[in-house]
Image 1: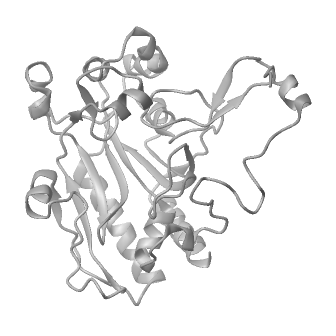
Image 2 (image 1 turned 180 degrees about the vertical axis):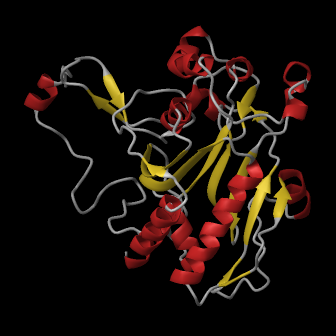
Amino acid sequence: MKKTNQLIAFCRNYLSDRDFTEVQTPVLTKSSPEGARDYLVPSRVHKGKFFALPQAPQQYKQLLMVAGLERYYQVAPCFRDEDARADRSPGEFYQLDMEMSFTDQNELLELVEEMFTAMIKEIFPEKKMVTPWPRITHEEAMSKYKSDKPDLRKNKEDKDELAFAWIIDFPLFTDQTKEDEEFVGAKGKWAPSHNMFTRPKEEDLKYLDKDPSKVKAYQHDLVLNGFEVGGGALRIYDAKVQEKVFDLIGFDKKQKEYFKHLLEAFSYGVPPHGGIAPGIDRLLATILGEKSIKEVIAFPLASDARDPLMGAPAEVTKEQLKELGIKK
């Protein structure tokens, strides 16, 4: 736990010294089709209606850019009703969320690379790392390594060797699957490779109408020793492009209403912006060479998303359900 505290403290100081402002975005928000199952919270005051716990502060941080906050960060709690994996905690996790206005992909990647390089030298001096980190296109990674999370270590048995890499130039879309239709609720041919707010490359905008499979995105994944430890992108800041992406995903009018506030904000003018959100526990577990992310979490959930310490989730009383307007 000490290393977690040191990592977060270092990044907080590093970003604050570079004019980033820490903002705590709401935890009780609205359910929206963003790619994973929501955790829902019933409202006592507004019976029959529900809050959702945020999958990520995506829309809030983009609205902060619209409002004129040029550099934002947050140690953000994220909640996704997903199955457990060795490198992912079920239910909830924390990510170092960063967003910048008036930036390009190169500036953003350089900032993160310089911050993490300095952090590792200070907190993990025993680790060996090659810099600068290679930047590999998604096409090259799949062709050369058969994976978009390549392990570039020379000696994979050396727990002190760290091999970071950036994977860039992802396709904007992939073919939509039944899983996409179930979680996002869209019924189109295409699903977003990253998320529905990722900006297409300017030179590929012409393909949105002709052949969306050719569109490349300003997406960037940070890979370490064969694991994706952070993902991000430059964001769409043109309402017409955003609506076009919604159309290609297959959103109907009702689904677009979930994002009405964002599209309206875009109409007032929004600067070019982008960001990234490394998962704190996943990053630390990979740096330390742990086989399971549970080794770096103080109170990990079981593989079936139970809290064995507190016995959660648990039943509640009939009185509580009645107060919430829920019948058992």
